[in-house]
Image (cartoon, rainbow, N blue to C red):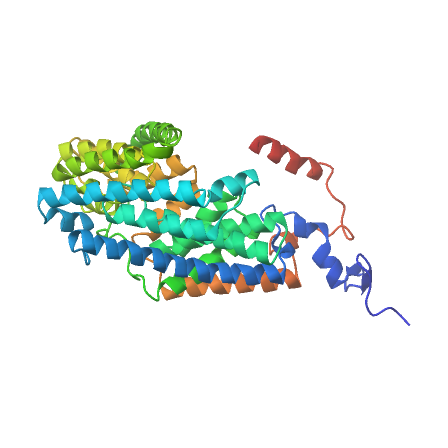
Length: 479
C-alpha cells in the first residue's frame, strides 16, 4: 500500500500535465518559500514568545497610562493646566511663578537623580544599548521610578520628551518577562524592542509608527519577523491606553492639497539645510550626553539649567515642555519670520542644556518640533519668492525630514508624520490585529507568498544558470 504521508521532497503522483506533483509539505518547505528576502524568522517564534508579546503590550499600555497620569498631575499643580496648550497655561501666570516652577523643577530633578544613583545604583538602564550590544540588563523598578522622575521634570517645564518613560518601561517589562519565562536571546531583544515601540505607540496613539520605530530603530530590520510582533504589541498597548489616554490626534493640521511644484522644489533644497541642522543636532546631543554630571554636581547643574530655561521662557513660553506646543504653533501657520528663527535656534539648545544637566527624557518630540518650526521658517522665507503654499505643508515636511535625519529611521519618520496628525482609530487597530493573526495562520499553512509561489518548482524546472548570481549581486550592491 502506498504511503499516505510522503516524506519531504516526495511526490503525491502525477499532475494533470504528467509531471510529478510535490506534497503540500514539500511545497511549504521548498526553496521558493525562502526567496522573498523579507520573510524574516516569523515561523521560528514560539507560542511562548507570542504570549509574552501580548503581556508586554498590555504592560506597555498600562505604563503609558501611569506615566501620563504623573505628567498631568504635575502640570496641573504647576500651572493649573487641564487641557489645551501647556505653554499657554504657563504664560497666563506671572513671570515670578513661572521662574519659581522651573527652579523647583531643577531642584527636584537634581535631587532625584542624585538619590537614585547614590542609593539605588542607577536609573534602570538604556534599552537601545542592551539591544544593540547584547550586554547589560534593564531594571523594571528603577526604570519605572526614573520614568516618573522624568515626567515630573517635564511637567515642571523641562525641555525633554515625554515618550522616554513609557518607551523604557515597555522595554524593561519585555526584558523582565523574558527573564522570568526564558526565550532565546534574539527573541528577548525582539521583546525589548516591541515593548519600546508599544510604549511610544500608546502614549502618542500611533501604533503603526510605534511598531516601525521598534523595528527600524531598535532592530534595524523591517521584515515579517520584526514588524508583525511589533505591530501586534503596539496595537494591544494602544488599545489599553485608550482606557485613560486621549483618543484624538496629537496635532491638528488644516486640510492640505496636493503638493505644488514649488513645494517639491523647496523640499529638495530645504532637505539639504535640514540635513545639515540634523547633523549638528546629533553632534550636540552627543556632546551633552558625554558630559552629564556625576556626584554632587547633580544637585547643582539641573537647577542652573532649569533656571536659564525659565528666564528664556518668560519671552518664549513655547520652549517649555517636550515641544508639542511648538510643533502645533508651526503647523497652524502662526509666528513671524523672526519668531520662527529664534524658536528653531533655541529649542535644540535648551533641550541639549537639559540633557547636559543630567535630566532624563526623550528626544523624539524636541526633534520633531525643531524640524517643524525650522521647516516653517524656511517655508515662510521661500513663500516671499514663491507664494501659494500653506505654512503647514512646510512645517510637516520639515518635521518628517528632521526626524528621519536625526533618528536615521526614514520609514518610521514618515509614519509618525502621517499618523500623529490623524490619530489611530478602531479600524486601524482592528487591521493590525487581523494582520497579525492572518500572517501567523498563513505562515503555518504555507510559507510562500503569492509571489514566491509563482516561481518555478525545482522538481519541474531547471534553474537558470544566471539565477544564482542575482541575489549575491544585489546583496553586494546593498552593502
